[in-house]
Length: 468
Image (cartoon, rainbow, N blue to C red):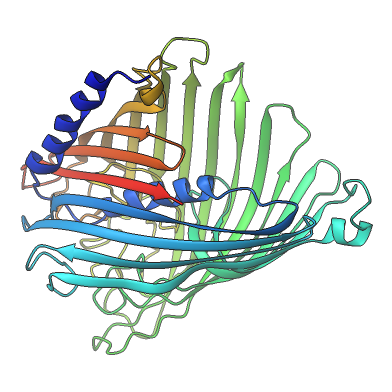
């Protein structure tokens, strides 16, 4: 039986965080951290369907955000989202899944950075809809053992990543094929974006993303603790902004070759992830409508995480280094065409379409950045039944430019100094029951000498998730 004093002790802490956390200068990019955490949580919670049958359910999410943008404007948002899903599994050969979303964003008056209205509907929209065929089982028949040559085909709207999700982590309308000959797992896919949020935040194309991806990946499964991989990814930009600013065209068409590995090393509790990526392609530089310049860039990620599985409170420690090459002749943005690369020169700024948690309050793109991260988490009340799945954690992030004269994705970093700043994040993830969870996260970024404005930025959110 739960001790009521512990339950009531948490209520005022949560309410105090909701009501009194300040919101000081920040862009909207911290919202992506919440969205990615929610996506992972929903994917993990989707029940495993029966071998033959139909399942359905849904989630309701509420989130509260309190932040300011980099110009010092205050923003407060209450977001309500309802998702419903259905799945059908026929003998583990044919699998169907569909998920819809309808939501509502309640901004304080004038706080919506898109259209400055207080209210905004989300959807209704089709978030996921796919069909997967296990070709090996289909050929072998339902009574046969697991086939010696697994083959799978998928088509529809699904989330897609490649490598460790460093260069691609996007929902796409796509087709995908996988085959596992021996100790190899081979994958190829072709997909198209359907969300409007563009990597290039230039005014003409910020909400006009139209991009095709295709690529393939090989993984080796013959090691006990390691899964090395190599991949090729192509990104073709088909955006046709209307209206278009005179004297500027847009096209960021890029190619990526990546190699890496993930698994455990020395000890089963010591997990690692490493990836190195080369990028090339073509892009329009600032003020160009005819000639395109070459892209030549590089990115890397290395992470170590140790989990003390047998230690009380299950502590976990991690360190990570993220890197994206920079371009010192870009004007004021490492990601945008407007204010971007100088005409007639190579664009050395690394830009990709993956996801990494680069801090809640600052949340920069990795382009022209070295980011050093240390973190820790634990379960402080694991011996109490109600709180056994409540995880408390923290991260410290340190940001340093690759090219001192080059810009980063935050255009308010307006000096040529290399020290960008540092951030401290704290969080609480609490699975209260199997169907109900709470997350609270707060981040504070202290700008470095790369910024003239030295005011501390803060970002706070809390989210409730109920599944049914």
